[in-house]
Length: 233
Image (cartoon, rainbow, N blue to C red; front, side, top):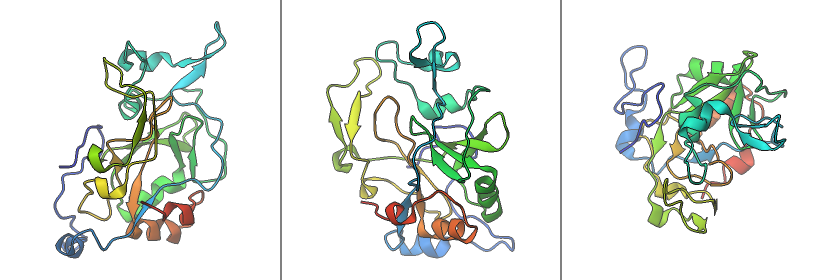
């Protein structure tokens, strides 16, 4: 069963009704999702030098967790729920300077432009919340539809032992396999897997169907590496 762990636009399942009351995805639900091709959002360029969760501490002069997120960090290992953290907002000094509509930050968060958000709204694509930055021109993406991942078939390799308090691992390699995820029935819903790559933070991971990918390309959304994005395991 799909999870709505993050607050924001809920995904309730079932049919989405078009303007005239017709189902917009029932044929896909009837045929199953096996025929759909999936894409993983991959940036076409380098990460931008933006830190959403961390900052250089003015006294100790090293990277530390921002004050607004300290209350949700594990007291043992310091890990925290990145998607839940975005529900606490973003500091005013966080900014993005790029001409792309889709970029990854230094800590593997995803930031998108106003154009990206407008395309989602126009095409009625669901599954993410847009957390605004202070300049009003860019947003941090916060997934609202979390697809459960079967650990046994995920293909994720963890390094070391899990934290005895929060259960998170220090690092992992390989992203989860698409086949290990319980995907939404609605092809217009993008989603994030419940298990993701572990580093200093868990990487933001978002998957979309070929239908969503086609609409983003139609509107000339810049910054997504379509060839690499299509190579989903």
